[in-house]
Every structure is written in C-alpha cells, then in structure tokens.
Length: 530
Image 1 (cartoon, one colour):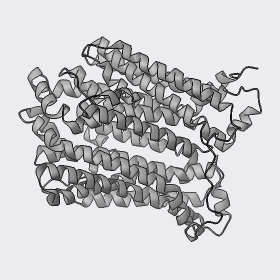
Image 2 (cartoon, helix red, strand yellow; image 1 turned 180 degrees about the vertical axis):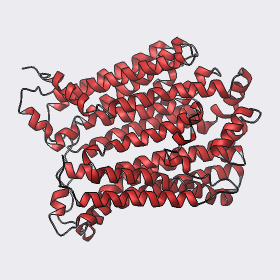
Image 3 (spheres, rainbow, N blue to C red; image 1 turned 135 degrees about the horizontal axis):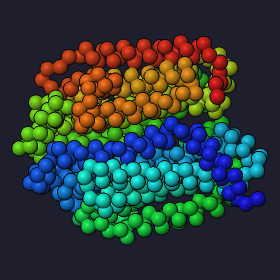
C-alpha cells in the first residue's frame, strides 16, 4: 500500500461534502472581475476619463495599499488593479478549504476512523490539496473566459486568471503546512491567516514604498507584477509554482513526523484551575470568541484607515464624469462625492462584518459536532443560556468591528479635510447603521442552526447572495424587488442630510425575531445532530 492509497475516494468524499460551498466561492470570485470590467467600460468610456481616474484615484497611496499598483490606464489594467483585493479573498478561501479537510477532520476524529480502512498516510492531505488546486485552476479559467467575454484582450485575461488561480494554489499549500503544526483546527487557521496577513503587509509596504522589493517577497505581490494587459511578464507565473513545490516538500515530511491528531508544535498548557469567569456559559463563550473579535477589529481598523484616507481623492476623481457621479449619488446617496464613496465602502464593510456574525453563530454548530456542547449542557447550564452566550457575541461582534472601522475612517478622513471632530461621529454613525443588516444574517444563521443544523452552513450562501446583489445589482439593473432580498438594500445612508431610522428599527426587530425562532427550535430538537 502506498502513502496515497485511497486518495481518489477521499476526493469524491470532499466533492460531495463541499458540493454547495466549493462551487459557490469559485463562481462568486470568478464573476466579480467581469463585473469590474463591465463597470469600467460604462463609467470611463474615454481614455481621458481613465487617465484622470488613474491620476486622481488609482495611484492614491491608500488605494494602492488596499488594491495594489496600477500599470496603465486601459480598462484591463484598471480591472486588474480593482481585482487585487480579490487575491486575498481567494487565498483565504483556499487555505480554509484545505484546513477544513485536514486538521478539522483529525480534530473531529473522522480521520482516525477513515485511517482504520485501506488509506495511505498522505491520502488525506493529497485529496484536500488536489480538490483545492482544481478549484483554483477552474476559478482562473472562468475568470479569464469572463473577462474575454466583456471585450478585454485574451492574453491579459489569461494572465490575470492564471495569476489569481495560482495565488490560491500557493495559499492552499500554506494551509496544508499549517495543518501539520498544531493539534487544533483553530490554531492551524490562526497560523495560516497570520501568514496571509504578513503577505498582505509585505505587499502593502512594497507597493507604497519607493522600492518594491518587499512585494516580491509576498505571494500576494506576484500576481500584480505579471502586469496583465500591459505587456504581460509570463515568467512571474513561475514564482507561485516554485513556492508551491517548496511548501509541499516541507509539508509532506512533517506529516509523518507526528502522531495522528497531534501537531508538531507542543500545545500551550493553561492554568491548573480556571478562573471564576469560566464558571458560566458567558465566560466560556468570551474565552472562545475573544481572539476572533480582537483580530477582526485589528483588520477592520486598518481597512477603515485605508478607506478614510482615500475618500477625498475618490471624490475628486469623478468630477467631470456625469455617469459616475450619478451612480455614486444613487448608490451612496450623499450630498458630496466623498460622502458617497464612504457610504458605499462602509456598506461593503457591513457585509464583511456580517461574515463575523455568521461565523460566531456557527461556532455553536462546531461545538456541537465536536462533542463539546454536551458536557456543558450536562451540567446545570440551561440550553437557553448556552445558546444566548454565543448569540450574544454574534450580535456584539459586528458592532465592535464596525465601530472600529468608523473610528479609523473618521480619523483618516478627518485629517485629510482638517475636520476630525466633525467627521469622527459621522463615520461612526455610518458604520453603526450597517449593524442591523448584519444582525439579520446572523439571525438567519441562528435560525438555521436551531431548526436545520445540518444546513447551517448555508448561512454563508445567504451572505454570498447579499454580496452578489450589492456588487451586481446596479450593473445589471436588477429589479428593485430582487435587490430588496438583501437586508443591506434597506440600510439608510446616514451621511445624507435627511434619512429615516425606521428601516434600522425594522431590521433590528427582524434579526431578533429570527434569533428567537432559532432559540425556540433549538429547544425542541435532539442534541447532537450530526
């Protein structure tokens, strides 16, 4: 029996388990660049308008820090830059997919059960990597085909698509390596995401500095340097291929130097006795969620600084472009173009914050399937107290991260217009306005967990629908009733001079009703449901 015996069967198992989630993130991330290209064709039809946009916005240090460099003023070059942040999302989806099917399987005990059959030592990681590699290559091909369909040159489209797919391949391998280092899935995710954050930081420093050598050290910095649509440098594609091989050469030997279920890094021992705070379900929930809240807040704070710093330049860049002014005014609903830009970008931050709410709500599902919920409920802890302890953080988390985003954006924008005291409360208010819509998605996750726990992961699909409607609704001129499916459509733009708080109260009431229904359903079902 070889070390990869049974890989084919595990591939089929992974495809079956991820038959909804895997196609979802592949299709969403493949369609978004196509919508960016269509938007640029519509909003900047002339070379002069594109050149003004590049000078006023695309080369702004804050925009470059967030998206990456721009190498020309063609629609293709602008699309490649606009899709720069998608590279980080592709990397995140890839590493999480691999960890889900490697370390998470070991932690849950399913890998040991499968190992009792005819299964090679490397079959699990090989199957996870093969599926994720294939998903990324498919994403790259779909991206390239979509960009060609919008009218962009084929060479640049293939270059951008391959670069995006290979970025995911590199980080999938990083996920496989991280899964060997720690005995918990949470620890593996933390290590891999820390590497992703470091790569983003290197790319940011290199792209905004005089010399860009730090960007060459980052896997997220390689894709932009292919210079899609602006004289492609195909040799750059060799960098992610070489990095993938080197990482795999390290990861595979490490997997045989540890026991099944263990990690190479020794677990950190906690105190011999727990503090008084851990005596109740809320203290335990705080212990489980505090790390995520901290790191999400740090990330959103940096995002707020970037968005606020770019607002004034974004407002100036569209002056003289009636089409873009009309769309920004309609979508952002603000009296000034900078306010319109901030309104739109903070709504995107609200969508991301909803992701935290969904993740925190689904922590209950992982606690249940991991066998950790039953021992807690076997004590005097009531079901309601246990569920509410987690739901509380699913509702508190979006508030914290959006307040941090508003504070950071208010400081950055206030400094640029010399009015920190005036802009700070406005930006915090605009961030808080996104909270009720994020709560609705968290409430839906709680409802699915309580009523149909096996389908709880569909909460991510609902979030993806909201993202698609927000990104594609204006471009495709969708009917209003379709746009109204997303709770974020109903969020008022509080940066306007006049707005009504009624939608906020309505969304809040809906979110609480969904969570209450989930609590009631949880009381009437068996535990655990696997």
